[in-house]
Amino acid sequence: MRKTLVAGNWKMHGSRQQTAELIGGLAEALGDDPANEVAVCPPFVYLLDAARAVEGTPIRLGAQNLAVEESGAYTGEVAGSMLRDVGCYYVIVGHSERRSLYGETDELVAEKYRAAQRDGLVPILCVGESLEERESGVTSEVVERQLRAVLTAAGIDSFAAAVVAYEPVWAIGTGRTASPEQAQEVHALIRGILASESATIANSIRILYGGSVKASNAGDLFSMPDVDGGLVGGASLEAEGFAEICRAGG
Image (cartoon, rainbow, N blue to C red; front, side):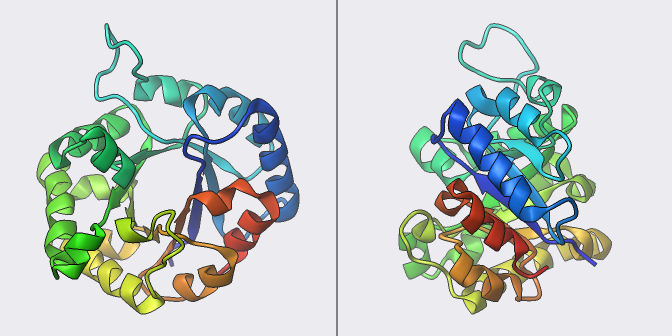
């Protein structure tokens, strides 16, 4: 049985005060033993504050990005080993904003995925299509291309220690959400691609949905057979509302 995972991606939001208040409020709302696994991914500069705030709670810590390199003269970059050192368990890899705004290719995303695992982190690998690609009917091709790049670089066995997140780019921050049926269709596709390499890993890996997830739609989305939780953006910035999402499907 796959345990639902709900991860909050704070993106470039927050402050030290907000970090403490948000995690404190979330921990209080969830209690000591939430039905679902919960993680938060603050900006780099607040990771240490967040690490202190999650101590003694069931909330796991994640980062939003990492460098491929282990160390060296890479001004402005943050290594996976550094993220692990401050208490991160997860790291988001290949988010659509990294792909579209910062030009991260499928190949670079695969390198970052491998770097995350090298440094002891669990990658949350993001895949998904743009509105133009969906309207052109190439969603399956885009998602498979993005997934195959990582399979080629890291192999199917690596997915035993990874999470996949399907995020239709047209639904991120737009208020538009894929219907539960649309999400299920792509989640089933992803699981099917992985199953062609290993049925065991495909059955055990968690595939999250990301794209305007909120308390009002989380239950319906998480009820789909291949949707194992959510990668939540804006709705993760308010403790009680995010806690309600975290309780959905549990």
